[in-house]
Length: 136
Image (spheres, rainbow, N blue to C red):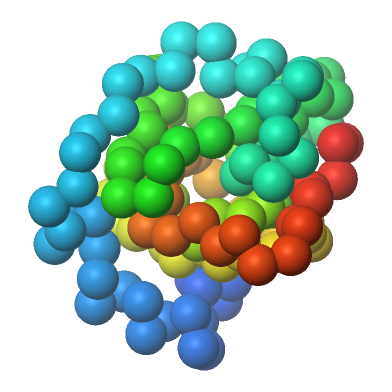
Protein backbone atom coordinates (compact mmCIF):
# COMPACT_ATOMS: atom_id res chain seq x y z
CA UNK A 1 0.00 0.00 0.00
CA UNK A 2 2.77 2.43 0.86
CA UNK A 3 4.47 1.94 -2.51
CA UNK A 4 1.24 2.61 -4.40
CA UNK A 5 0.81 5.88 -2.54
CA UNK A 6 4.32 7.02 -3.43
CA UNK A 7 3.78 6.34 -7.15
CA UNK A 8 0.54 8.29 -7.08
CA UNK A 9 2.30 11.35 -5.65
CA UNK A 10 4.73 11.48 -8.58
CA UNK A 11 1.89 12.20 -10.97
CA UNK A 12 -0.18 14.73 -9.00
CA UNK A 13 -0.39 18.49 -9.27
CA UNK A 14 -0.09 20.18 -12.64
CA UNK A 15 0.66 16.90 -14.38
CA UNK A 16 -2.71 15.52 -13.29
CA UNK A 17 -4.41 17.72 -15.89
CA UNK A 18 -3.01 15.49 -18.62
CA UNK A 19 -4.96 12.45 -17.41
CA UNK A 20 -7.95 13.65 -19.41
CA UNK A 21 -6.03 12.83 -22.59
CA UNK A 22 -4.84 9.24 -22.44
CA UNK A 23 -3.53 7.15 -25.32
CA UNK A 24 -6.86 5.36 -25.62
CA UNK A 25 -8.54 8.70 -26.30
CA UNK A 26 -6.20 9.59 -29.15
CA UNK A 27 -6.24 8.11 -32.63
CA UNK A 28 -2.52 7.34 -32.67
CA UNK A 29 -0.56 4.83 -34.69
CA UNK A 30 0.61 1.92 -32.57
CA UNK A 31 4.34 1.22 -32.65
CA UNK A 32 5.93 -2.16 -32.78
CA UNK A 33 7.37 -4.01 -29.82
CA UNK A 34 10.98 -3.22 -29.01
CA UNK A 35 12.51 -6.64 -28.34
CA UNK A 36 15.92 -5.28 -27.32
CA UNK A 37 14.78 -2.27 -25.32
CA UNK A 38 17.19 -3.07 -22.49
CA UNK A 39 20.19 -2.26 -24.67
CA UNK A 40 18.83 0.55 -26.82
CA UNK A 41 20.32 3.52 -24.91
CA UNK A 42 23.85 2.78 -26.09
CA UNK A 43 24.38 5.09 -29.05
CA UNK A 44 20.79 6.43 -28.95
CA UNK A 45 19.98 10.12 -28.82
CA UNK A 46 20.34 11.49 -25.28
CA UNK A 47 17.01 13.30 -25.85
CA UNK A 48 15.10 9.97 -25.94
CA UNK A 49 12.94 8.86 -22.99
CA UNK A 50 15.29 7.04 -20.59
CA UNK A 51 13.99 4.35 -18.23
CA UNK A 52 16.40 3.39 -15.45
CA UNK A 53 16.45 -0.09 -13.91
CA UNK A 54 16.51 -0.76 -10.15
CA UNK A 55 20.03 -1.37 -8.79
CA UNK A 56 19.05 -4.97 -8.03
CA UNK A 57 18.84 -5.65 -11.79
CA UNK A 58 22.59 -4.93 -12.18
CA UNK A 59 21.89 -3.17 -15.47
CA UNK A 60 23.60 0.24 -15.52
CA UNK A 61 22.54 1.14 -19.09
CA UNK A 62 19.01 2.57 -19.15
CA UNK A 63 16.36 1.46 -21.60
CA UNK A 64 15.35 4.03 -24.21
CA UNK A 65 12.21 4.86 -26.11
CA UNK A 66 12.85 6.93 -29.21
CA UNK A 67 9.44 7.18 -30.84
CA UNK A 68 7.61 9.77 -32.92
CA UNK A 69 4.92 11.91 -31.33
CA UNK A 70 1.53 10.19 -31.26
CA UNK A 71 2.93 6.68 -30.98
CA UNK A 72 2.73 3.92 -28.40
CA UNK A 73 5.67 1.61 -27.79
CA UNK A 74 4.94 -1.70 -26.07
CA UNK A 75 7.50 -3.25 -23.74
CA UNK A 76 7.18 -6.96 -24.23
CA UNK A 77 7.53 -8.30 -21.61
CA UNK A 78 6.69 -5.42 -19.24
CA UNK A 79 9.74 -4.29 -17.27
CA UNK A 80 10.30 -2.94 -13.72
CA UNK A 81 11.93 0.51 -13.58
CA UNK A 82 13.20 2.68 -10.74
CA UNK A 83 13.19 6.09 -12.45
CA UNK A 84 12.84 7.93 -15.75
CA UNK A 85 14.00 11.01 -17.63
CA UNK A 86 11.65 12.40 -20.27
CA UNK A 87 14.31 13.83 -22.59
CA UNK A 88 12.59 15.83 -25.33
CA UNK A 89 9.33 13.88 -25.00
CA UNK A 90 6.13 14.19 -22.98
CA UNK A 91 3.50 11.48 -22.67
CA UNK A 92 2.29 8.67 -20.42
CA UNK A 93 3.43 5.30 -19.05
CA UNK A 94 1.08 2.35 -18.56
CA UNK A 95 1.93 1.50 -14.94
CA UNK A 96 1.39 -1.97 -13.50
CA UNK A 97 -0.91 -2.74 -16.43
CA UNK A 98 -3.77 -0.73 -14.98
CA UNK A 99 -3.29 3.05 -15.05
CA UNK A 100 -1.59 5.77 -17.02
CA UNK A 101 0.92 8.12 -15.38
CA UNK A 102 2.01 11.31 -17.11
CA UNK A 103 5.66 12.19 -17.75
CA UNK A 104 7.10 15.45 -19.02
CA UNK A 105 10.08 16.67 -20.97
CA UNK A 106 13.26 17.37 -19.05
CA UNK A 107 16.80 16.33 -18.22
CA UNK A 108 16.30 15.22 -14.62
CA UNK A 109 15.64 11.73 -13.24
CA UNK A 110 12.25 11.25 -11.59
CA UNK A 111 11.57 8.35 -9.23
CA UNK A 112 9.04 5.71 -10.33
CA UNK A 113 9.39 3.70 -7.10
CA UNK A 114 10.00 0.35 -8.81
CA UNK A 115 6.86 0.08 -10.94
CA UNK A 116 6.30 -2.19 -13.92
CA UNK A 117 5.83 -0.34 -17.21
CA UNK A 118 4.23 -2.10 -20.18
CA UNK A 119 3.64 0.77 -22.64
CA UNK A 120 5.04 4.21 -23.32
CA UNK A 121 2.84 6.75 -25.12
CA UNK A 122 4.77 9.69 -26.59
CA UNK A 123 2.28 12.51 -27.05
CA UNK A 124 4.70 15.30 -27.90
CA UNK A 125 8.34 15.90 -28.80
CA UNK A 126 9.72 19.36 -28.08
CA UNK A 127 12.62 20.55 -30.22
CA UNK A 128 13.11 23.78 -28.26
CA UNK A 129 16.61 23.53 -26.83
CA UNK A 130 18.64 20.41 -26.16
CA UNK A 131 17.36 18.14 -23.38
CA UNK A 132 19.81 15.38 -22.56
CA UNK A 133 19.15 12.66 -19.99
CA UNK A 134 21.85 11.26 -17.69
CA UNK A 135 23.56 8.18 -19.14
CA UNK A 136 23.26 6.21 -15.87
